[in-house]
Length: 143
Length: 431
Ligand SMILES: Cc1cc2nc3c(=O)[nH]c(=O)nc-3n(C[C@H](O)[C@H](O)[C@H](O)COP(=O)(O)OP(=O)(O)OC[C@H]3O[C@@H](n4cnc5c(N)ncnc54)[C@H](O)[C@@H]3O)c2cc1C
Image (cartoon, rainbow over all chains, first blue to last red; front, top):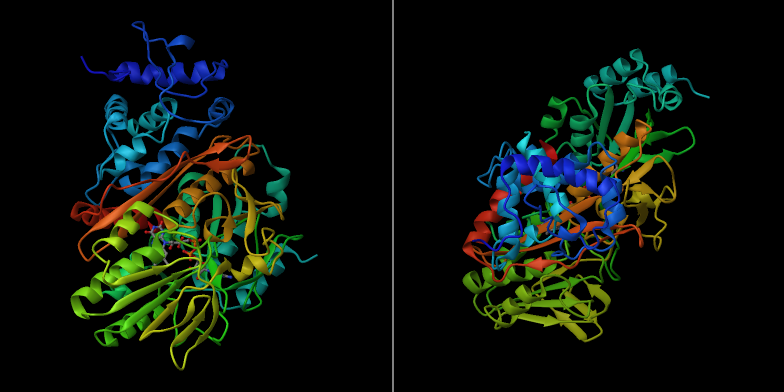
């Protein structure tokens, strides 16, 4: 059994985007934000929101992000410099466009706990919260 | 008050390209004028209007591209750039070693034009904030609803020098880079390459140390017995400390002499000597990197409200804290983020997204995230990297990072990744 905080399938990932957004808008406190560990029913409760990533004062900020209709696009645009605009890479770096949300989240979460070494993605994996990963993964899965 | 029609006549009489003239005329026919945009704010479709971007470098090209890609056909995006093409600073240290050429680092604006950005060649001299117009060097006026400035930096003239024609900084890639490469090639074996690093903030924090490394690697192979003398105004290496200190004390221990906390009194071009706080230092090649300040456009128009050098901005929108409707991104702005091209691209996207919401009368994203990534060549075949992810902190109202992360060691894989990263970064910025 893997030690990952979550292991998502595609449907769960998609529903988590919605559930995550809903939970945040409903004012769940996520400070510091970490892995969103879904229960067997796929609905995270406040006690299942466990902290793994340092992220100061992010609660209200994330709530405000979600008010913006373009939040997932803008977050995902952080990946464009290396992975190509909209994840359509043209230089041999992985193409993200069309990957499933669960694949992206799964990879990022595994990389987060692996030693960084010389792999820049392992550094990047540590830089985004789970709530942000959900939005980013959702965006690329729709490209 | 000058009417819209008169603006266009004035503009048409100047040196604008035919395409630009036509674009201005077309926009007039569709009447997305500033006044009507303001009156219609909030009504759908709200994104008719005109955003003018000045400076087609890393920040400005990206801003123009994403304003167009995200803003749609109704939004008129005009990019005004003084040069016909852009020369990338990124990887320009490899021109010194002969691994890259300046033409090979040049990018045109054709792809931006292809997606509907109106590109005008010209230099903007002043911003007329009241009527929201710009005056170009030829006297033309261009109006804007919102303005994005990404003019990059200017350099202080160091004491003793009258220009940077012979003693060059090469911190803006172009003719000076070629000149410095020639000087390095002509340097006799056993000569000294003396470079100076200004007090932070300067563009590309790892850049000067990267230059010291690639020049040291080059002279170790081509000019045996030569030295690279690095005179740093700062108390220590300003970025990727582990990587650079390991290189300076390891593979380049016999070549690089690194001095910290050094101030420059004056430079004598004739004798190629720098008078410093640690004595007079002569070299076969002098390469002083002078202190920077925001481009003149920012300073001449009352926008440099941080120490008289940099533009203060709200990092949710990059709107100037001195002047509404004017946004400043990239090296010219003062934020907690580094002055670097990869993050100028990220700032441009946050700015473009905010402008589109502002023009639509919607709230802007309250939690922007940006990231910086720099690959630094250390030798002709190895590179390391530095990266940091920034989140908006509503308490300090700044972009905050838990800290930059750097590669464990320079590697051949890193050098290969650097090329792939650069290709995608430039494509994401220029199309
Ligand atoms: C040697 C070196 C290596 C570097 N390596 C890296 C790296 O690995 N990674 C990284 O992220 N960054 C790197 N950088 C930094 C990077 O190049 C800059 O931070 C980046 O270019 C800043 O973008 P900008 O848009 O602010 O300015 P610039 O890219 O300088 O663009 C400014 C543009 O504005 C135009 N302009 C200015 N004033 C006017 C006017 N009044 N009217 C019309 N046009 C005007 C100029 O012609 C220019 O095209 C490096 C820099 C150097 C010098």
